[in-house]
Length: 422
Image (tube, rainbow, N blue to C red; front, side, top):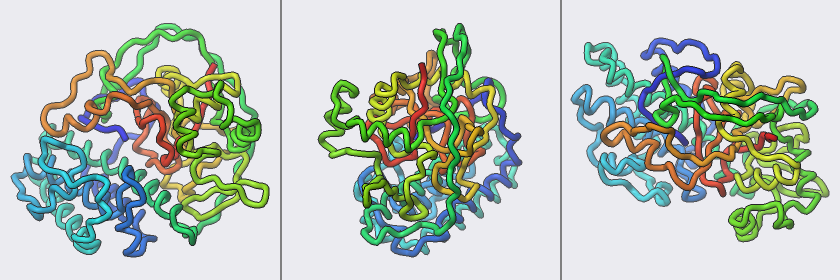
């Protein structure tokens, strides 16, 4: 997922003013641990595929981030354990050695208890740092803000990684037992926009990751964006019409990926007694026909759009519509950890990430930050597609109209869905 330097925020969706940094630090760090409350010790250590990470690793990595980029350079703090750095460094080459990503599940030590002790010790140091004169310096505050947003990204990743791990268990365990409200259908309409010269990207006060800037002008032809995401029932119609067997609907690489992977439906869908069921964080559930379809790759989204006589929006088109919208929808704080839809209310945020047709490339004039923290986003600007809008597993306060998420086109394990354009 995307990531940093503190940048400005303008032309963005309307979000509440952030709480004081110290209070937000405590809230964000505590929320990560709340997400782990349903887990047993065994759940913390499993790694179901190379792209996923164990829950224990997420807890430790987000702590390492604060320790390495905030406390070390700005508070002169020594690492909690010198030999843990390589274990919990993700991809920051300038920050030192890194344990191989596919082998994070082999790290039975440090234990879960030791990782929680590590978090508590670093949190105490962060609180003391914020009470010191050094903690009020703008450069330190910017890195703390970055660390908070980084941790919020890992909250969503933690849940999607757990979902994938539980999906591989024949017992089909639920992360959290909870009633799931049924979605209510709304007609799909296309909302027309005139196009013209528009300004996108972050500017003004507020936080943004470095890949959201600089703000710049883009010319748009007149277009229309769908009023809601594509539903599970609509995607099931694509399947029933032979969508996975019709190469004329697919990009060449996408059809090859679908054939090689044996894709016949979105990830976590299975046929059962003539109907579809889906595996979720609430366990196995019947398919909700009106809910947004999720766990589709860019390739599947693009093929569906072509089948439906439409296309995927560009990120500039999406942002132009979203900048006038409130950040409202279904989010992780609401407790329902599946994408749902509520009739005529079809917010552009939450529910399912929307694949766009835009390659993840730098905006004109983009410059990464100096040092290891500059590796957060810029070096991934190739061979990936932009997603917009957030999902039901995204924290509400983490999103804005200019936010750019990104994944490779074959990725399916995230809460990725489809919004159409014409």
